Amino acid sequence: MYHLTPGGTIVHEQYERFTEAVECADRMSEFLADAAEICEDAPPGVLGQMNITTAADNDPHAPLNRYLTIVGNEPVDRFRGVAPIVSRVFNESAEAVLGENTRMELIVDRGVLERSIDAYPDSFERARELDQFELRIAEESLDFGLLVVDGHGIVSAYDEHNNLTALVDGDAPEVVSWVESLYESVRSTSVPVDRLEP
Image 1: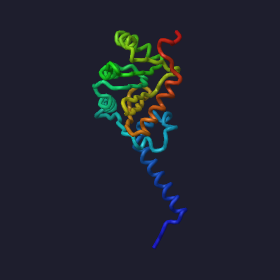
Image 2: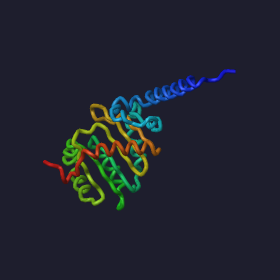
Image 3: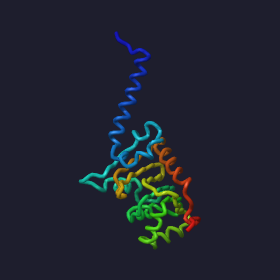
Image 4: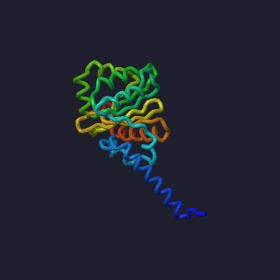
């Protein structure tokens, strides 16, 4: 009869963790190709709990469609997002879930702010007039997107041409907590648009 020694048990457990990490890295490879830096401080196991949706030749809009499915079209309680691009689709999806009691906060960088004002001046002014909506401006250029909406966390990766390449999401408490921490790290270096210096 064979039994694992205490040392063998440790090796076995470490090997299982290693193989799980390799499998997770392989599954998340397309997301990590454009978003590895923001995942450096992710708690162990968080990425393994997330769904991944990637753009493919036969379905280039799969990540966007996943985003729209998660957000839905009914009013939400709370919406916190980071947007590195200007997008009519994202603007319309946010408007669709904005109810009278929704608290909404969005962070963009200066480049996105300027393009939003130029491309969608009416939408920009309407958003600024809403009491429950706050637009914040990040100090540095943003290269990833995220959303925390009613207990669901989303992080999106973009390539060098600002194309949405992959999206990871989940509603496990550890996942939402991690996405919230990413959001707070961006928020801590942002200011409300009304306080932005010219």
